[in-house]
Length: 299
Image (cartoon, rainbow, N blue to C red; front, side, top):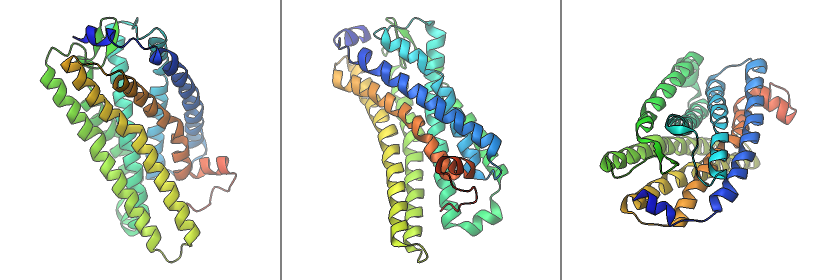
């Protein structure tokens, strides 16, 4: 079934478009995130919760960027996997793990901003940097645990590295797992992230000490972050489910398949833009990038 499904789509779209996209994203992500990590480790003196979460996020982005050469080679060969079953499993696991680690740490950063702005007294009394470290360890363990089934499901089938190889076997279990990852990995943190930023926006607009122009700037920044989040993660999960449902039925839709691959590239694009997020929570990075003193107040 899977072999027939793939032969019916013989477009060179993925071979021509995806390798250069992944190549550019890898270079930008490595340079931006390694620089951000260096600044965080060597320059940052105030390791509050936002900086701890950002440091974990940058490490995740670097790990994922280092796996992109495998995908560049894979798509350059017209989706011919030459690295064996074990590497296929590890690559798919790392993609999933770093994807959901990114989503969860973005959620953590948004909740931290909400508490710092909307509940500052609660933050000062009850929240300490050690809590961020404990949460970070939990996030890594939790995401690695929910991503671990991909080490079993992923495999090389007809010389291609599939997330869910040979859909004829245990199809219902794989469908359940896809829905589970969509809900726990994307929908839940998606709702929490948007709710946090909505609360920040409302608090800013109710603050009489903030000018109208400043309020508009805050709303614009938060809006851009939410749009980026939506474009980066939501299409991937929707197209993944639709794509695999079509595969299960033996049907073909090249637009869905190509759209699914492009959505993976959009996920990678997100890690290229994360240094902007680090600049928002780190005094040292903001000082270097914006040429402002390290004690500039950050709303």
